[in-house]
Amino acid sequence: QVQLVESGGGLVQAGGSLRLSCTASGRTFSSYAMGWFRQAPAKEREFVAVISSSGGYTYYQDSVKGRFTISRDNAKNTGYLQMNSLTPEDTAVYYCAVGPAGSANRSGYRYWGQGTQVTVSS
Image (cartoon, rainbow, N blue to C red):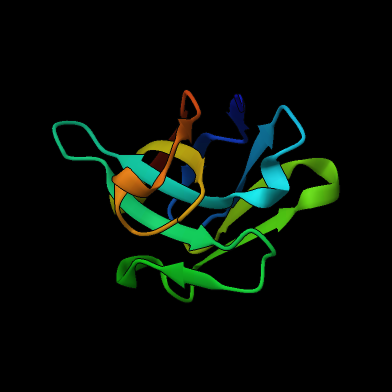
């Protein structure tokens, strides 16, 4: 069992930055790939980024490439999503998730956090 807690969300103006954190309980975090997803009001939850268990591989949704950076510190059982040049279209609840496969598909993840709200004002 892995419990995930996101933090770092908030209200920011367009063009600003936020760094989300995802802290995991348990000692198996380093064996899982980690992903970030987001869900805007009245929309499906969508993939944002994924990082492999070792951190050596990352993959991003096209709309965030060059603006967002996913990373992890396995010694701290924590993953991150650095978000720069934010736009109102990035407004959503952001979720972290971990799983053995890790992919752009939600089915690749076994454990999910409760989400953190990110609101970008214009």
